[in-house]
Image (cartoon, rainbow, N blue to C red; front, side, top):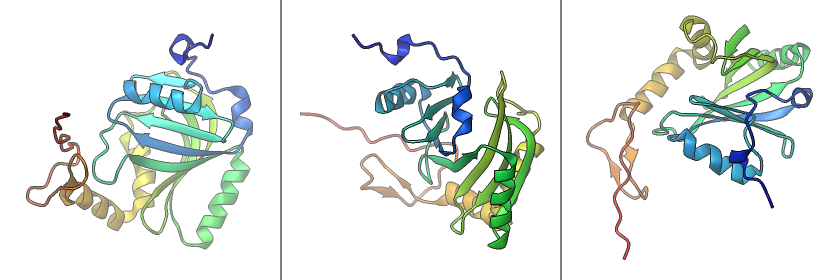
Length: 207
């Protein structure tokens, strides 16, 4: 008889063998972490390696993926928080940095930073369309979320990657872009909705 993932204890540790492999990384905003974690556990066939009230992470070998979930409401811009790539050494990170400089990418660097329950060194980069990427080296797990008190350290690198134009554009889109309702067929063009709120789904009646 199979054991459901709820019966398997979550150790809240990154598996030692996982950090020796280059993996694709994605981070998704989710409106309900308690619903999203079981869904992805069922989809992947394995439990998360970390699960806190404000964060969850899956480590997959096949395909090589690090998926993190953050409990933030997914409104304008969709559920994507950022994309990323976890590397296995600082030398590899420096090589990526050198390549990105040759194409004049917007780059923000964070050395020796603690966030998302991990100690990391990372680069924040935006692609030509403003999609945010995180390229990082994992050093170790930490027992709390990290340096939430040091907002300048946490936010300066991503903001540098966005640039002034990118920051203004993202703020404008979140504040004033039309919001889609329910089945996505109706759009409200009248009153802007604050970036931290979402339109309630349209009610439906089943016969």
